Length: 439
Ligand SMILES: *Cc1c(COP(=O)(O)O)cnc(C)c1O
Image (cartoon, rainbow, N blue to C red; front, top):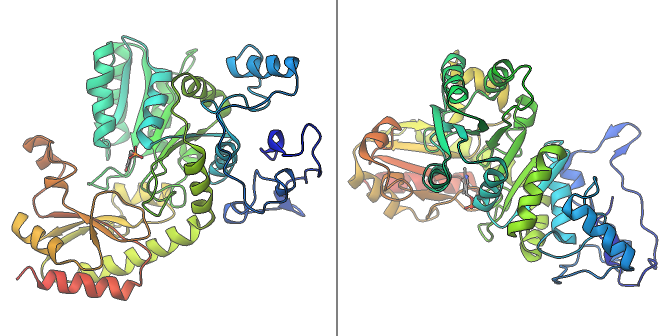
């Protein structure tokens, strides 16, 4: 359904009739990259504008009093089915609704929600699920702010957690989930795959099997959520492997131009309804301008991610042959026959474009390399059109205790790289001169 029905500029009866959406042609289902150009938007409802306008408005006019009441019944959950139209911009707007329709397409998700940042998506999701005394089970490590949120912030409200390492075996996963179940109500199982910066993949299917087995016959099963920022939505589609809620920092590959901050959650409508209600309450939705920028970004998502992935494969292949390089932690180089390679085979369609470069030496060598880069920019974040490089031990993971840094293999010689869509030979030329500059 085109989502701008409420916003025709021509009053209560649209001047031009909406056109039916085309989702398939003669039984041939259209692909996400095709649908990104028009899905969820009908130009005829916005004066023929090819592209959706940015709807800058805080509130929406009701057709009549009864329609206003009906809208509120939907928003507040008094009537099942949700909002029929738009009410107020803290709840939703046309640009955000089009964005949400398109986000869901990539993973064949029933529903999707957009947020003001990846962290506000995660926080809203967690707040909608946890109660005092609950236990959260999570894979480790997680994005640092997510760990802070779970351990330090939710911890203040009597929520505890148990974790298993990202690369855990089904047996290890079972031990931890069973221990959590013995401890209290398990609010959710929260995963992040691949883990940063270890690149360890979580066996989502194993987590699902264990969850289903341990909670068989119970009224309430903890939902399985996963942060798919590093590989999604192109290279990993976790809903297919047993996850039920997929979380994104859209700031990264989805936004893709390092010019916005946003988040998303996709999954089944029944699971997203309480998250939407929490978002309505606390106002963590993305703004219309950012939603519009994301619509533009999604049109080139497949092109950008494909090119970045091809570039990364070339760069990593070149890097691993260099004398200054100790090893390259890249998903394309998993040991054939290993458990990680098995998970990769089952869960991933590509190795991504973010990897760990372990140089020979320590901080001096890593800094010399980073300071010599001329194309790649020295910045945290990932998934943009441009190549970025950073030093986890001295930057993103600076406050991680030494012991845990060692366990996670975050040495002073580690450089984290996110490859962009530049010419791959130019990138290799840049890395070549920077490696030589180490001396
Ligand atoms: C960046 C990131 C986040 C947080 O997203 P923001 O948009 O910065 O709030 C969460 N998870 C992962 C894996 C990330 O890379």
